[in-house]
Image 1: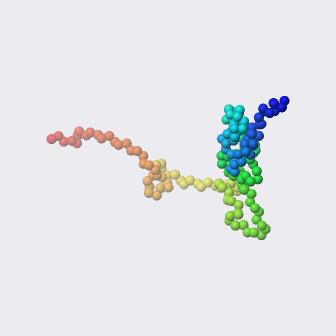
Image 2: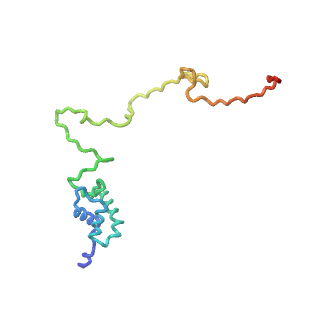
Image 3: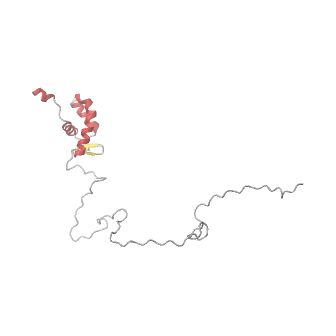
Length: 168
């Protein structure tokens, strides 16, 4: 029974934590460094490490057991900076002391986008259209020419008039 527990390898999360502790790099360790350490310590896992290590690293990252920062994996701790980005809450701000005047920098940011419609506002009436003139003329034009590109005009075929030509 003692030999069975001796030959058994620790779980992947335990091996990953052990590798991070042993490598002890300031900015964390990348996936290849962790894989090399595990292969050097537990030589029989070389084929499994390539397949299972990324899976376990992703699971640990999703669970919050590891932090992925600048392509390196770090154990979470008080000295690790919080990741800020899309979907992250803003940094906590220190409350103003009582009696302090808010400046432009400390005022809350302006809302983005178009403001919402007021449900209690009266409906606005649409502007009436002016009386339409004859078709083909533009009402809003001051020069009398229609707006836009002019229509294509087909040239008239030339007619041969034998009566007008004098014979010499």
